[in-house]
Length: 454
Image (tube, rainbow, N blue to C red):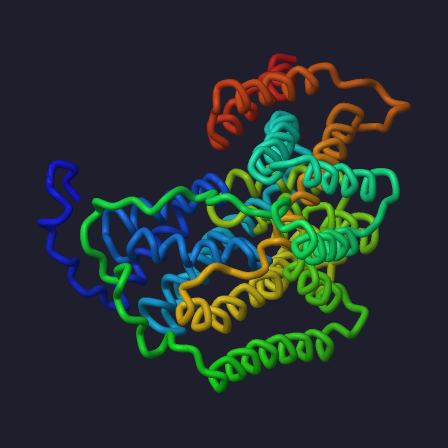
């Protein structure tokens, strides 16, 4: 849209065919950097302002629904809009293409990491990325905290969650459940404590008429019906059972693939608050319980996830790849395929619930266009997530600054890089990709360049 053109003189955009939308969703899958905030901003710019496929009000209505679901909200938003425009296949294509480019890229990068990670060049890059990741997690805690902790009670929930996971080592699912119960009952007894602000800003006027406008009637396929609801739920559950059955038949109940499928199904249902919130749970299961990878590898995986397009929760593909490689599930002569299949398995089980939530719940949301009723439990969960993410930042800092434990030497260079990265994020608002690039170059200068001179 030309900014000098009055919005009320613009004609409605031409209808969008399925293949036209397909190519857009494919492009989005390769440019969706910047985490959920950046990805949602890209979609708003492209879909609301530039292409006018959906109005601001309908865009935000869909986003508000996705925000209360477990799972990556940006991917779910793409699924929702694709479904609204082109039925179920449109939703599957939009959500799938949001993930697939990231999966292929992460499989390739994960292979480079496990096969060549000991080389000075690769080691130098990761030496620089680890302090950046520590600062990014701390920044995430601050960013979510400033938005979520609006009063002393919510600060108290965050503090209690931090103590629960840091001092008492309680599992993340239990912390989420306890926070949800506090929000449920607290919302009845003291509703003013759990009031959620607008968060996304008021709907802007002036982009011109949209294909799916504020008062566009709900498409026939998006109307709520119990029959369709049960059909979607049955299809989702059937796909899950079929996938689990295949893994059990091929790999056994205790096999690595089967255990990954079951574990990441649970993780997918607990990702309230974004990827940073579920990482402690993934760490507890993947590192401490199943030993699919080490704590250092977990940090490296998050660094790779930050440098690739797609949802940050795609770090689970790295976890799966390393776990499949280490376990040599398909044999010692097929390590790459062990990792690639494992990465695909965990991606499938992580994102399947997201598609089911959107395709099953979308018609109900479209039929009401009202305020969601479960904001109080979500508000409490989000407050608890702040405390959990702060614990994650301390966990990363410990492994970066004392890589050999407290008995080992303190890494002063990494400490300076953590401080510098934090200043760049908090003070100068540096983007994620420039920060990672700068830190990777510093890591090369510190670790790799001296080895070349010698």
